[in-house]
Each structure stands twice: as C-alpha cells, then as structure tokens.
Length: 330
Image (cartoon, rainbow, N blue to C red):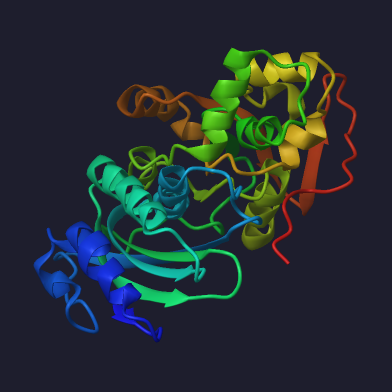
C-alpha cells in the first residue's frame, strides 16, 4: 500500500489504521513493500472483481463510515459469490478529501475489520491518496474457485427455471426510506429496509454450492429486470417472469400496500445483492437442499425460453410495460 500524496498523513493512515487489517497474511509484509505475494491454492483458479463507490453517488454522505466500508466489501463479495467462488483477500484504494477527520478513517477501517472476520478475508494492499472531490473508494477482491469450474451469465438454456435467493426490492426501498421519500411507513419496516440497503447480505455460502446446480448466475445489483436481461443476452435466449412469484419481504409488501411505490420500483431499483440464477428443471429438488444448507429462501420466478428478450406477466397473464429496466452507471 503506497502513498502518492505530498503529505506524510497518508503514511500515518497506512501504518496506524490499515496495517492491522493486513497483519494476518505473511505475503503483505505488513504493507511495507510495493506489492503483496501469494500463491493460489493448488487446484484453484483465481477470480477477480472490482467495485468503486463515490460519496453522494453510491452511498449517502451522512452514512456511518463503518457501514460504507462494509457495503464496499460486501458488494464485491456478492460478485465473487455469483461466480461460485470463495473470497480470499482484497486490495483497497482510497481517495480522501484534505479536511477528512482521521477518526472517520479509523471507523471505516473498523467496519472492514468486522467483515474480514465475518467473511474470512484480509487486506492485501492498495493505495491511499488525496482528492479535491468527494470521498472515492475502490476495492478489488480476489477469490478462488475449483479449477475449470465457474458460474457465468452465459449458460442459461431454454427450459431452465429462473430462480432468486432472498427477497427483491428491499434495497431500493431502504434507500427511499433513508432519503425520507416514504412518508407512510412504520419504524420497524423502515429500520428493516434501511438495514437491507446499508448492509446487503452477500450470498457467500450459496454461490459455491450452485457450481454443480445452476446453469448461469449473477448478483442483482442494477435491478431484477436489468440483470435478468444480462443473462438472457449473454446466453442468447429469452425469458418470462411471473410478477406475482417474485419474493417480497413483509416490509416491502407493506410499503406497496401504502401506495407509495410500484412494482416497477421493486423490479428495477437494484441494490438487492441477491443471486439470480437459472436451474435445469431436473435439478429442481436441489433448491430445498440449498435452502437448508445456506439458510436462505429460494424462489422460482419464471422460465427461460427460445428467442430473445424478457417478458414480465401480471396475475392475469398480460405483459407488463416498464419505463426502465434498472440502474444506469453512466
């Protein structure tokens, strides 16, 4: 982890705040060198993913530094899980404003430390710089998967079942609640939904267990419809989702019943970080086994078909029309 800024402040941050996060891995050399060294486990392929977050765009500026750190790590963990891989370690690049309080950075590192214990990963290195703009964070996560095995977006085939883990729409509703956009919501529902937004639950146990079961997989970050579209496009197939079968939390149902959001908000909002995968119909019995092993519900919401494009049907079997499919990054 190197210092590219003019001030010695960054060396203090690295030595006092981030070095403890790397202490458990001998190949990091206590962050005193320009790079880390490690050997992938025998019989494993490396999986690499990277996410960036900018204050005011990807997280609320009044969110706690612990939550911001944990979400940064967890969004990457979700990508690794979607490939069927297990997390190994990560590289962190941070761009801090000139007037940043060091206590904020310490709290940020505390958040990383909490999730390092939870998910069994360690800091391997990175970079620390200053910026005249908002806080900018980038994390590169390394994972491992059995050699020659992996889950991709491109494996879905006509006849496969479309499945999701957990519930859909909680992330976007949590954001709306945090922004004060939901006026008719009780405290319990608000707290539940905001927690789902601020601290997503990457399905790290489920992902590797789908290697022998699923034909394609990704995590829902941009919205159910947009991410289902990625699978269909990469696989060269079409698909159909039954809106009534999409699993919703009790809190999400309460918000919908209050009339403040629509199914379009739920299906296109993103920030769910649940796994969306396709399953050959002969493996349908595997869902119950996976639910027991991973302690997370899984739901069949549709089917892959010949052709192209996604159709969403309402309770009467009519096609639903949406003005958008999901989050646009640029």
